[in-house]
Image (cartoon, rainbow, N blue to C red; front, side, top):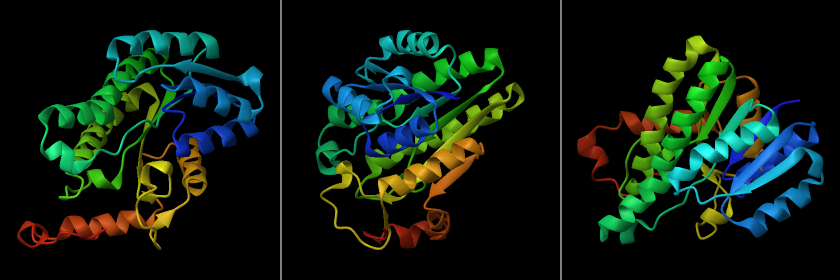
Length: 245
């Protein structure tokens, strides 16, 4: 039985991951800001004895240490941390507001860095553990339509890469997850097409990546090739293209 902490547990992908883990008997600690949604998810999992919840505003960085300590105590040691929280900002609004831009960067990057710093020290002392962070293919290269979101995800990807190298000798795995276009409530207003993936399919691949302690995984895998090609486009050409994916 694995003991798993999920931060951002009300996200669609995280919910499906939790279902997989509870079905196989793992012990889960769910963290999110919406108490009603948390309770509903815990009830839906139908394994109350192995599912615990904590309501937390992820942007209250001062509460992160206490949350991790409580989760570690309740679970009797954390084996796996999945960070799945995030928001999809309104790019146009961010372009007109420094305050809104920085708020989105805090939610999508700084709050994650805070948790990663704390859990890294915990796992390093134990010389065991797996850290999984949901980043995004949007962080591989900036684009006009979502560069605030993409830059935050790029920060996370680079931070995770450095953390992976640091924690390697401590037997701690760091898994960077880069989903492409996932059909979730956060993307409800987007027109769907062939490149879109269901959250339950993404969750299966995420759980497998965590089980096998992958370094970095694109979901679905074809996004690795898509982004490889996009990153090879010369900047003089790329800057003239407004829509690629």
